[in-house]
Length: 358
Image 1 (cartoon, one colour):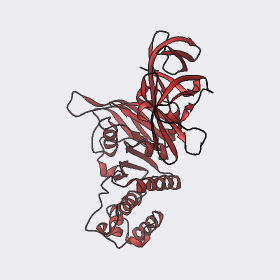
Image 2 (cartoon, rainbow, N blue to C red):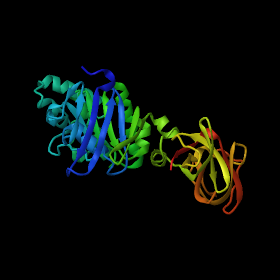
Image 3 (cartoon, one colour):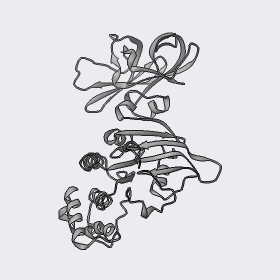
Image 4 (cartoon, one colour):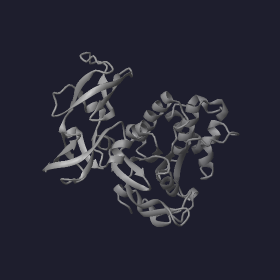
């Protein structure tokens, strides 16, 4: 029996479609029971292939996948007991909402009385009790997605897989559904593996996020660690907005390096074990930068553009020959009045600047 921490286990899994190119490479990943883990990455990074292998729609080329301690690569999808939610809902158009939800229970030979109880309970949970006699075509996109979610939950699986389930919804509804899915997960304690290329979805809902690129997990971490402590330049660039400089390490003391950028010495945390003489990329989040020179690292700046975003002003600057240097100024802060072409200074703390692989 698997321990709680490796309820789902990818053990040295490779996947190739043509026998030559690996789209998933030596994947080693443990997912705890009750965990919400998101596989995040650009198109072609291998995240959806991993989900399809876990569902049983694809077979690993090498390695094995375990569910609750049992190897499942040779078990067909319908016998794995896994719930799935897709972007296109996949509801039966000729069945009512009630019949759609009842269907997974019917194929499992559950009697009519219990079926009715389970369907009623899950409809109440997703706040759709009044829609049980409607056809899918009579529902909005958000309502259809709620029913698709309810159908994946109704037979009480131990694991649910979600493949870009909110991709077809508008922005406001998508954000609302993120919270609904998160609250359902907290309420039921079910294990969820979620695939998306939307970083805000991943950061909002997940216990941990696996960032994929080129078939490899680049970093596996909690949302806050992923954003605040990226381990390489790909993760820093892919998660959130990010200012970058490339320079040469001039000195090193414990975990701090001094990096020369156009003659200016900038101190940063040494994340990727840089040595003196190495080329490195410095990463700084826009919200960590101050207009003015009160913090440790300082640089001259010229204002290129000011864009109003409601809750903040997005200020694009030219800093050390980087004319896409972004600073986010809170709208509540009334003390700064900047204009295009204006000369100013920017500054940031050493601990907010990370020296990563070049």
